[in-house]
Length: 88
Ligand SMILES: O=C(O)C(=O)C[C@]1(C(=O)O)C=C[C@@H](O)C=C1
Image 1 (cartoon, helix red, strand yellow):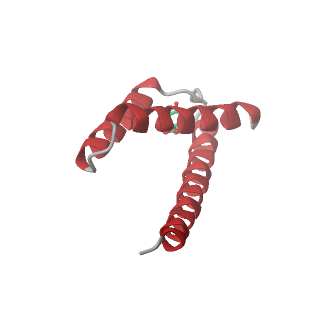
Image 2 (tube, protein in one colour):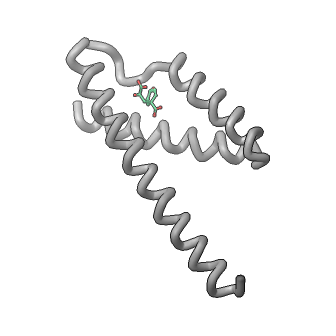
């Protein structure tokens, strides 16, 4: 594969990553509605820890830096929490 082809592959992957982020955000919005109906708080620290632990395990499985992957997931969780607070 030449440079242009490799960058095209990255472009496709980048689009898929954003699509997955959008899907995750959509599901989290639905979770927020359920929590709101049940009178539960937006933040669930135990669940956040489970998400972070899983991110670390998955990173190790795919041989990428666990701390960097966890940093990405911390941002994704914060994104959802901001949205969840704004929609209340
Ligand atoms: O699982 C939930 O309760 C969510 O709202 C989703 C999510 C996440 O982004 O993974 C976001 C905020 C919560 O504090 C915990 C987890």
